[in-house]
Every structure is written in structure tokens, then in C-alpha cells.
Length: 298
Image (cartoon, rainbow, N blue to C red; front, top):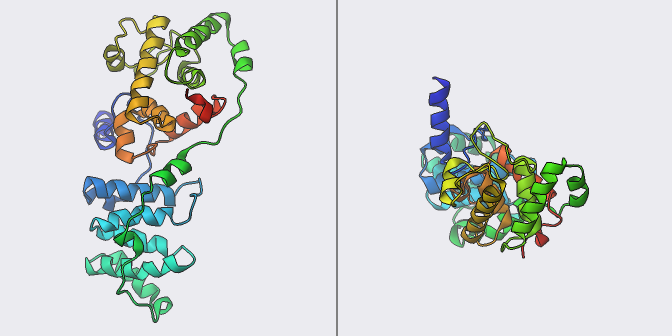
């Protein structure tokens, strides 16, 4: 397969809009590819939690994500939920056998093997009652947001600015002035500009993102930027895009930052920060450059 064809399929699979990210995404199990989009999204969220270096706020989160897929009738969802439930101490682990038996009834071979391997552990267990997550699913929005939100960082913006060349200090002041009239906090917009270009009005990325706010041609045109290398136009266009994202994602600055990097489409698909290393590191860096996550918004 040629590199160009490979990149085409990566773009198709990721469904990105705006800034296309060619960074290698997490490799999900092949079985996920055969699921319906909503089921697949739930499976991928569970897989990300289960395989993340960042511990979940509760050990049940991976299980609950997989249970969403199971609730939609997915054998793979039941298998993954059962597998995850086995790792949970307490009453929730009793749900493992129920999920695995449902997956087994659908012909899921891995679930069948897992039941055989642990049959002695489930002696006396009954599976007449479905697990609570199948009957009354929880709203995981708050749990996901809490887990993906960065800790309030400590960053000395003044010291950072003093080390910039004089021409970039002038651009920084321009960002500061334009940002002061935005619905968004000055700190947040300054952080985006710092991460995107280090306040370089002539910056250009391999993906053809241009100027201080690194606008791709489509985004520049969309927000009225005629000359993306004119810092005043570029910054104003970037702020307009951030404000548009702010409205779309109901003020969630973590999602705004993620969408600015990887596109709103990828954030929609993954219902949070996408599983791309570039985007995850980008979000962390933005909030490290912000005085406080809560103070980044007016």
C-alpha cells in the first residue's frame, strides 16, 4: 500500500475536520471495526480508559464504558465488560459472568474460553439478574470530563514573554489586546497562540497551517482571514474560531483546545479528547501555559 493511500485511509477512519492529524492513533482491536458507529465509539472509549497511563477516577469507568456497548447489543461489548468486571473488587465483579455468558450465547469465542478458564471461581453464582449498568445506565459525562481535565497548572507568562525576541513580544501584545475583547479568557487565547506558533507571525506547518494562530486555508477563509500572515487578521480569525468552538462545546475549554488541534469532528466522534498523542499532549501544554484552568474563561 502506498503512503498516500495509507494516509487517505487514516483520514477516512479518523474522520477529522480542520487540522488533520497524521500522528499515530491508538490501535484498537480489529473486532471493533465491525461494530456500528455508536457501539464502536463506546468500545473505543472503554479501551482507552483500560489502557491509559492515567488511572481512571474510579476503577469501574472502563467497565461502564464497555457496558454501554453491551447495552446496545454488542457481543464484543459484553465480552469486554465481563473482562473488565473481573478486575473490579467487590459486588461489581459479580457482573462478569453475566456479560461473558451473553457474549458466549452470541458465539463469542474469547468469552467462551474465559468462562472455561474461570469456571471454578463462579461456583454458586447466578446470572438471572442483569447488571445495573444494563438496566439503568449512568450518565458518564461528568466522570469523563473530570478524568480528562488537566490539573490547574503553574506557569509564569510574564517570564515567558520576556524571553521572546522583540518582534514576537509585539505580536504577544497584539494577542493580549485582541483577546481582552473576547468572551474567552486572555490566558487561554495566549496559551493557544504560544503552543501554536510561539507568537511567530510567519510560522507555517507541514500541514499548511499558517501564522500566529496556525490557521489552515479552509479555517482562514471560514473566519474572514484574507492574509493569514498578517498577524492582526490571523489572530482575529483564530479568536473567532475559538469563540465558535466555545459555543459549540458549551464552554468546555478542554474540548475547545482539543478541537482547535484535531478538528471538531474528531471531538464529536470520541465524545472528548481524541486518542491521538499529538492532541492529548497539545491539550496538556495549553493548560500548562494557562495560569489556571478555571481562570481561563471570563
